[in-house]
Length: 247
Image (cartoon, rainbow, N blue to C red; front, side):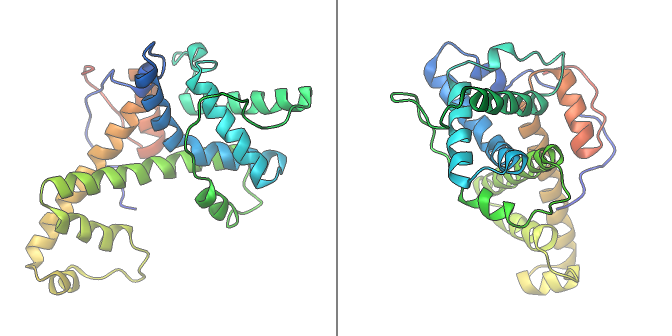
């Protein structure tokens, strides 16, 4: 993954899926919760698997119920961005919900007639098999949050490049910055591989990295509920200081 810790400041925004998730409109709320679930499915699933060593099927049922409760507005109405980060709030909610289940000796199954979100846990479970036991569930939650956010940003970048007719820019970015090749190919090798001038490789990669950075920040803005939370999360994820008026 390329480094995004470059100097500069970024405008803030008040647009947030958190606000949409608190909407009185069920359709808007559902789309917002689906966006939150896309970013937090793996962190929540792996957290409960690691924290309490429960079977995969129980962790999947619990995670499904957790996001269903978000959809039903049982949790997010009490979120106050002035008191902490959304990711910390969601992890705490997951912890409390699980403890309530244990206290009540409840089964981790959705109730009949509850809203349903389509969630896929296969990839999360596969990744869990590679995690070191030395990592705490809390640390893993934060790492999965960051990894998922960056993955979504890569998907956004692909869509941006495809719409703009610049897929070669994305393919270069994918080949040089995202691939695990060791050693990395030289710009001269990439120029030959893609049939470009070496200067084009430099320029295309600069474009893709700039757009990727913008995609990361856009995703981060959408997943935070206030300017201050956005600043804190941008600093935590990218080491960036954000300044300027909200947009």
